[in-house]
Image (cartoon, rainbow, N blue to C red; front, side):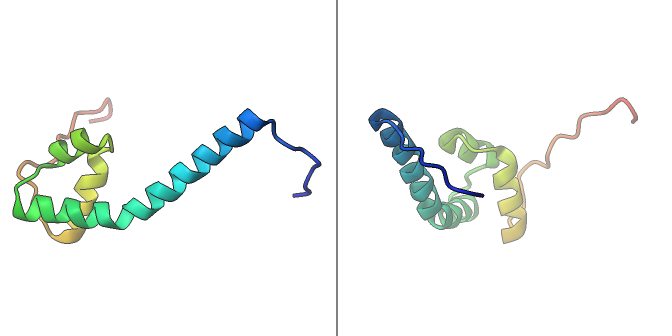
Length: 85
């Protein structure tokens, strides 16, 4: 993709930089969060729901994490019936 001669306004540049910094911080937290979640589920009895509420992340993220780590869930995921059965 070709570059343009666009120069953002000062407020736009500041907002774009905030977003870039946020993404970098999120990336830096990814592995420590994963390790902590596994530890808390395994050793402290935290549930998928607990971690989802505390982090604002999807419960499915923590379900997958638990399965990968070999942690047995206290309650299996709810399967709702669909129109086709």
